[in-house]
Length: 432
Image (spheres, helix red, strand yellow):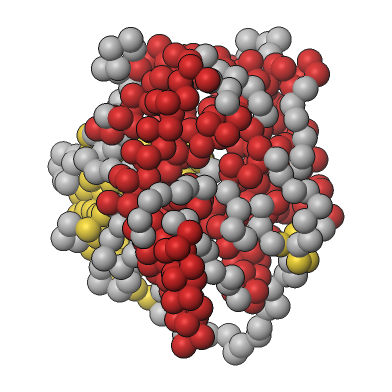
């Protein structure tokens, strides 16, 4: 860490002079290990498991996956176009349910741009029209008085504007205006606290709009909103250095890397965040494939805004599969996790025994097998999302919050978090 400290000090000094967000060069072995975690996901080529964010992150990184990369893009095109366009002439509910969401469609458009493709032709125009319809529906849900809320989230709203922007597709000023208002009055963007992810995604969308000049009548307001987003993200930095938390930091850095600010606050804050991020990498905190796909571009000093004019000929290092090390087989120990659900009647409380290293999802599955407990999930790009517990479905503006007793919200989802022995986990139904 001595060399790293010196490097960070020098970069901090340079950043202070330039008033920009500098990211130091990261050890290639560390980046390789991170990239190796997404390789198994590239073998899952069904629509349910395909994740355009993997392809985007890889193309903006310093790594490449050779033939697997080309096959993955082919599978994305085949499945997304069949799902979105092939079922357009049918009213079959099962086909409708299989269609990608607004956020998934937006990421698919980013994936095409990451391969230096512009959407075009009849099929491309239909994809663009579909995404614009999604945005119009969300705009109506928010309402003229801004008292409503999008059906999905402002994160997906900003992501969709960004995806259209990098393809040079203009959206109406009124659509952009809803996101501008949300950033200006950020109580719309969070569940009791500032959502750094949402603010960063909005900032990336605004930066693209400003550089592309697609909404010239909104240019001054967009410029002010970029500054507002920068300031709010910087104020959300923790004493450890993360923006919000460790998992929202990569997207925040993507946005801040596109920024310029007077004074030294930006370069100093980015330096502190990068140091914290590198420490988290060495602790192998990043296991979720969506989070990894947002981090890889940062380590290559790239952001989603670079998809305005991507460099598809930039040299990249071949990603090699991880070498599996063999060790004497050992029977894993058993841990005991207390699972609590106070939001139902009668309240549920039960100790669940699972092998050491199990995920919280494994704990829930075991509890369900034992009887007296049931839960439901929905597949998302970031992993399974908890939608029901003990028959109680989430309502509008509700979610099941994962709490480590006594009152610490978990930063990971049920598939990524691994409880410790004797830990108490509470599933709490929360309104926002």
